[in-house]
Image 1 (cartoon, rainbow, N blue to C red):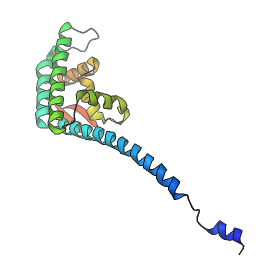
Image 2 (cartoon, one colour; image 1 turned 90 degrees about the vertical axis):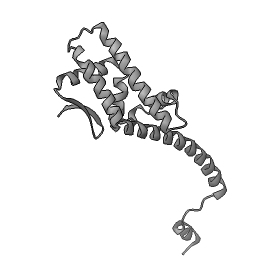
Image 3 (tube, helix red, strand yellow; image 1 turned 135 degrees about the horizontal axis):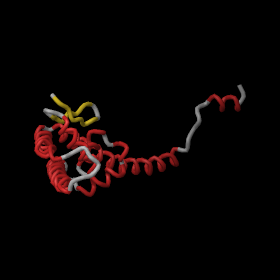
Image 4 (cartoon, rainbow, N blue to C red; image 1 turned 60 degrees about the vertical axis):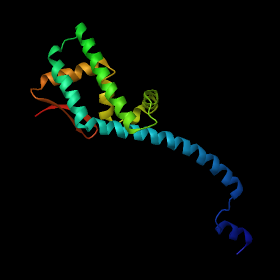
Length: 167
């Protein structure tokens, strides 16, 4: 076998010094990225746990039950709808913020908002629904109308969706 044939059958050798330098830089970048990704995943995990917490479900259901009769399924909105929406937003945001502060020492609402914007496509549907209902009036109105339509409304999480349902 000629020298050339031997070389072709051998595994390719690499300049390890150059590779080590590249890996080191790569590892540092991944570490920072993983840390941010880990924080995001942890915040989303806490939010998902919060959504199935009986205290949260009862609080949200009670608010909707008390206020849903005021809402009508018409395109024109009454002024009181905005007052109720503001109360709901304050209630939900306060609860979420308090719970995240309890569970995550590094938590800040600003960080959560930034993470949500950066990872918009990665947010589970159940979390997205609750966040939208507290920040988007039309989503909130839809939630209230769903409650109104059901005789015995409840909130149920199935898979990745937050649903209003009747028993």
